Length: 248
Image 1 (tube, rainbow, N blue to C red):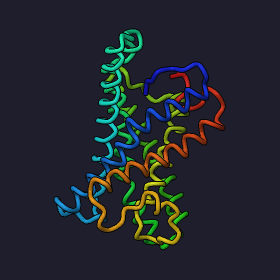
Image 2: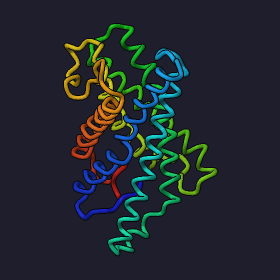
Image 3: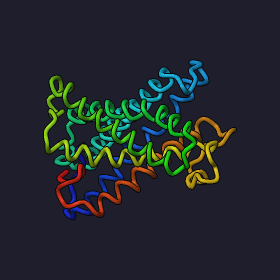
């Protein structure tokens, strides 16, 4: 993901975190929730079926890809209008589209995995925090798998997607850890499971009777809150040059 580079490395990390939250993380949660409504209310899929999981994973992926491409298209157009041609020219939409495809591939994996992971953990009647943590780890791992698989397959077709290396493996892991945080906080939208333990329910909980649009907004807010929380911690403690958002 290529963004404007700022002089202070720590400031740069947080500014890119904000940019990614707006362009991909909120749209991912919004897209997952919207596709869950499509799957259950219009396609008739039960939430415990693979068809439901795949539909929501696809919605997640579309949110990431569409959000990424739309954001950088608008940013490029804005920079052109403000006569900042050098920064506008640094945004290569072919590269950004291919980056969006890679990230969307990874989101397809984590988004598809989310419901089965949550259902499995809840079926064990685990405390909310264990469901929260298990989803973080499980979906973060699924996202990492999607990144590595995407790099392996897509690098043969798209020049801006790099084949798996040790170096991008390290940065992929740090990004996946933050994405795991987004998926963990997304568990907070389910107010039906142990509501007394759900410390996120009052903030992002989607209660019965919530309109579809508001529910999608709450879902995007949940993933955004989780990502920002996880990534801010990584920004503060990781050595310079070791995070995915360094050197951008």
